[in-house]
Every structure is written in structure tokens, then in C-alpha cells.
Length: 140
Image 1 (spheres, one colour):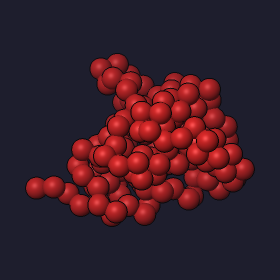
Image 2 (cartoon, one colour):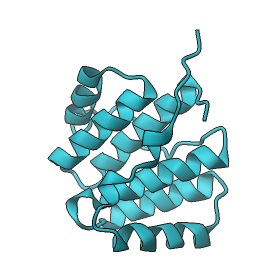
Image 3 (spheres, helix red, strand yellow):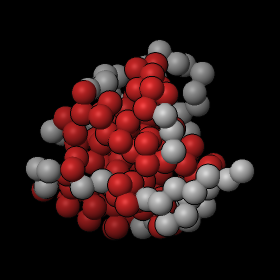
Image 4 (cartoon, helix red, strand yellow):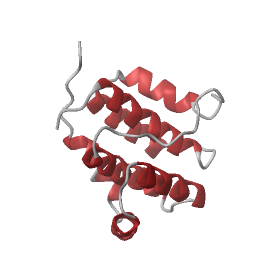
């Protein structure tokens, strides 16, 4: 899948905003964002720094991302659910925010609930992230 620089930025920023929802950063979240960030074309140090700073950075607006395609939005939501469950459970604020992403990108609530059930049933959700399958092309 080809992904624009804007979509890549929104994808990564969206994951950061999701991490911020429960007001803590876990090792699993740092590892995930570094892995996804690398797939999206970002430097490892930038990703790790961004994750560590997200709790303190009050200037980043907490707006759910709008993607250029429903397919990419669905991949983001799947990754977001895996990220939210990385610590073994999903917080209410995390789920609510992912539902807002779903709505903003015109994805059905039914699809979201199905994905929520799938990810919560898998103990290894963290290892099956959609962004690992992205082929990132950088715009000049």
C-alpha cells in the first residue's frame, strides 16, 4: 500500500495521541511506536523521543486523524486497538477515542466492535500489527 507523508504523519501522531489517553507510557507502547514509526519512514530516535514527550506536550491537539482512505483508517484502528491492549486491557478513554476515529473516517460501528472483540480475544495482538505490512513511499 502506498502511503503519503501526510497520512504517515497522521498515523504516527494518532498513535501518540492514543498513548496519551491513559496518562502513562509502557515499554510495549514505546516498542510498538518505534516499530510502526520505522515502517512509516521515521527515525527510531525521533519515535522514541516523541513517545516520551507526548505526556508533557500540551500543544498537540487531541483530534482524531482523518485518513485519505478508509482502508488506511481501518489499518490504523486495528493498530490502535493492539496498542491499547498492549498493557492487557483497554481504557475507556482509549476506546472512546478510537470510536471517534472510526466515526470521523466513516467506518461502521459494527466493524469497530468486531475488531475490538477480535483483538481483545487475542493474547498476542501486539505481534500482529497492520502497519508492519505498509509499504511506505516518501514524497519528494
